[in-house]
Amino acid sequence: MTLLLTNEDADEILTMNECIDALEGAYRDIARGIATPGGRSVMVSETGQGDGVYALKMLGGIVPSLGVGAIRINSDILTWPESGGAKRRVKLPKAPGGRWVGLVLLFDITTGEPLAIFPDGVVQRMRVAGTSALGIKYMAREDATIAALIGSGWQAGSQVAALCAVRDIKLIRCFSPNAARREAFCQEMAAKTGVEMIPAPSAEAAVRGADIVLCATNSVGNVLDRDWIGPGMHITAIRDGEIEAAAEGSLPDLVRVEDMRGDLHVHSTWSGDGRSSLEDMIGAAAARGLEYIAITEHGEDLSINGLSQETVIEERVQIEEFRARYPDLVILHGAELNIGRDGDVDYDAEFLAEFDWCVASVHSHFDLPTARQTDRVIKAVANPAINVIGHLTARRIGRRPGIEIDFDAVLDAVADTGTALEINSHIDRLDVPADLLMRARHRDDVVFTISTDAHHTTEFANIKWGVSNSRRGWVERSRVINTLPRRDFLSWVG
Picture (tube, rainbow, N blue to C red):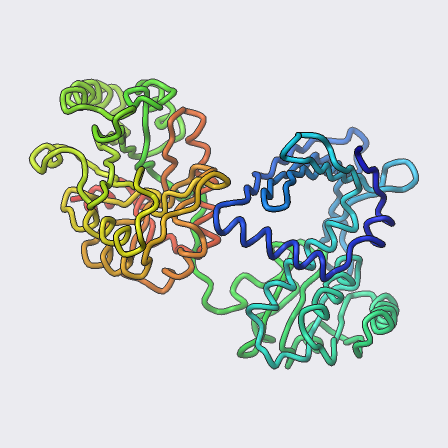
């Protein structure tokens, strides 16, 4: 039976503590490679009525530990009016009855049947606030008791409830541009939470001296200034741009898709699992405006898809022909080598020396103990033929967790040899995971590549996922070698 629920039903059934617990479990499953977060799809069109744009947005995910998969669909009319001197993003309730339209479809992953259909309003509000609360739970100071809130709308109320669910807050100062609204909001939330709520005359007055700052507005610009921020202050935001870009004073120069000049992990039908010809892959790379590309077919030790030495030589001849046809594209003849149980890789040293570029990746023996996994990877790192370690943990999101490895030891090894670590852009890998990238953010002696591992021409577009993953891990552009201009990149390769 499929349940049809309303926002009122969700508000009555679901508590904030239950929401936070469910989110924490799901996020842990994602980190372990068990749950599958889907990509966001957004389609935009004119409304034909001159009052904004129409946006159809879809996002899904699967949480096997809960036995469910879900899709969220939003059908929105978006406008950007000015209010209080700032431009804001406003969804218009244009559906009959003055309603917004957003639905969640919940499915049973064992039978495929729909379990429930319900509006996304209350659940979405609680999800956003619950995520903020998890950050506060684990990262805010233990002695934090004073909070600042910028915003007094629907999301702001949920943020207050979630904050109070994870911390013993004594005082919340709230600012929003409408004085009457913020005063009414403070009275309402004080009655609901039992926490003292004070309307502040300005955002600065609310923020200065607070332990925790919650930004919960629909502003398209920043609402928090760096000069208001003090040491140890925990800051959350529900929208990009709410925090001044340099508010922390040390935000890195992160990678953008348009910064990527080359793709250094590409397959073709020469590999048994490639689905586009070499000609098509190179043509697609040229069409995307890339300056360089590495063709990296599987090594011979991958028995199903790997290339023998004779086949490698045959492909090399064809690559020479394409180099003449594409003089503006540097085409490196490389290989994706397999890191064996003891760290050995395909081919002998003399044959490896003939490649322009070598990726070495784990494709087998996933259950070795941590020490042996670490040793095998470090042995590959030390191989002078290896330029980069591909998809370090070998995870397949939703299907296989990553190998257990001493990441800090690997960082030391790649720093010593100058070997790069690949950030694999394939949507079911996103490997190195963002949490490990964050651990490496202060290691100026470690460099990365962001590559697609494309097996088909359409997969060059996956670079956006790799870039997004690198940004989540705060990887600076200066440490990603395939953002380098062609001459500088070739100099790095040597």
